[in-house]
Image (cartoon, rainbow, N blue to C red; front, side, top):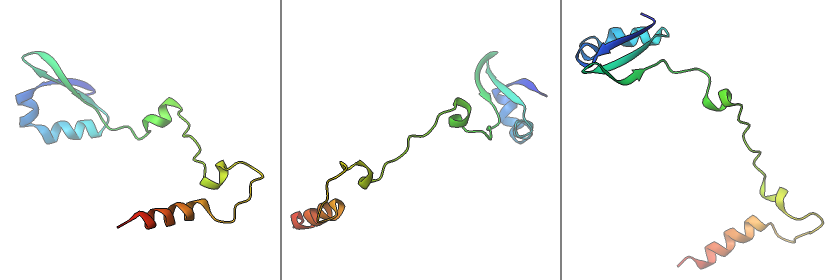
Length: 89
């Protein structure tokens, strides 16, 4: 069945059978009045990120972005938490 076509009514009537073919790697083009309207393809195991070679950005921790050489007596994150708690009614 490799790459086949099916009318909407045919596809609906034999959905399970067509999905088994897709599961095995086949593609099905759905036709409405002999015009292609959709394509059913198997899900690829490789993600889009992997296919495009996208490298995720490295997330920096809060402490990593502070200017070097500055020493603080308190943890900035703790300061923000306490400040927010003070503002709550």
